[in-house]
Image 1: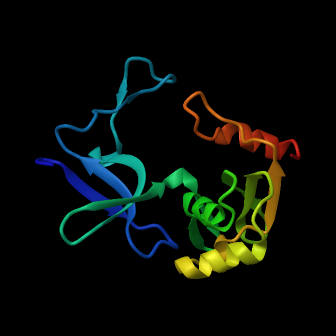
Image 2: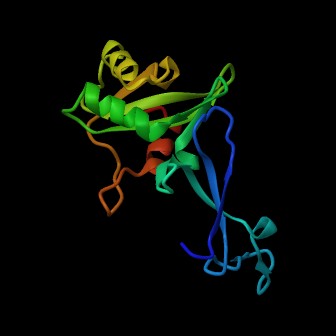
Length: 170
């Protein structure tokens, strides 16, 4: 896009791509924050953090790998929660699946797979991960079954509600 500058901030554990920052005349001027009414808070150094993890192809095409908040850092490696959900769907296509990251004292974070109906077996998930060239860290050890995943009005999984379920011990 003419006049738009892009920059990738490296993310430890992600070998290709990084966190996308943009600036230019068509990028927002800043945020109005509740603690400073009427004062426009511009992005740091004029660079707006999109929250997207992307990579650029040599021909300029952008591949969005996911949202920064939908990645987990496990033992120093960044794991895409969306990619783990795809693995679960390949291993057990008969139900919908959602993955959350929760704090872990040993590895930083750990994954929880919540499946509508029976979750896939660990062996099936491991095989799907190997086939996709993904690390064994992307295979959740904690897998839970629910009758149905909480949904937003759009039909998408309500991850905030799912997090509350996990906190309550579902």
